[in-house]
Image 1 (cartoon, rainbow, N blue to C red):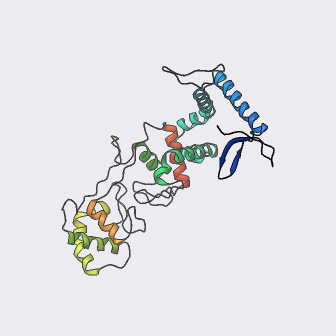
Image 2: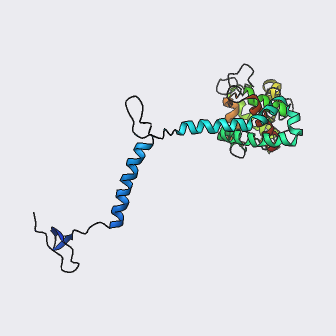
Length: 288
């Protein structure tokens, strides 16, 4: 081991190590740092004794204080249920129209509905309810299944293609994928739909597609293309498009017949919570 010496400049003892003429000083750690380190060790030991800390084969050490975050959360949720109990009871008994007409109940429904929407619906419909490709915009006045309070409540309850016995169920044929129509006819129908929406379209193609639309599409979308809420068929004459408004998107929809899925919330949310959510959407997101 190299000899330890005292540095002439700093007066600090060296470690005895030297590299390229540079000697390493054995500078002691700052006293404040040492005290912080010792204090951290002491705090950790006290924490291990007082709080749940060490895992074991069949559980964990409970600590002398027997603290439990799980119990705290359960207690907080119980307190919240008690706090909301009165409002929930009134919501349970009131009709949807009564809730909207009662300022106190409506304020309660708005508060609960906003929270539930953010936790459960915003993932697909967006925080502001504006939706996205394949997910309906809830802030406009375009509703596939109706935008009344009762319609919204029913859709939330049973879902769309959800497997619920009363589910909202619409089925657009995949005219191209299932070879129900030849590709040329699918292209002509695309032009016809573009024309329905009031945009410039190939007149000859639209004329060829007119009898096909009357035979294959009018039963759901209507002779004039304005759709039918009773079967969830969209209005093809407005400017709202769930899967895109350009020719590629329209042709793709005719070809594949895409259909979205919305879960049923009947088994996940209480009836009064569904009411509150319906009131929130109706009041804040373009209800009819």
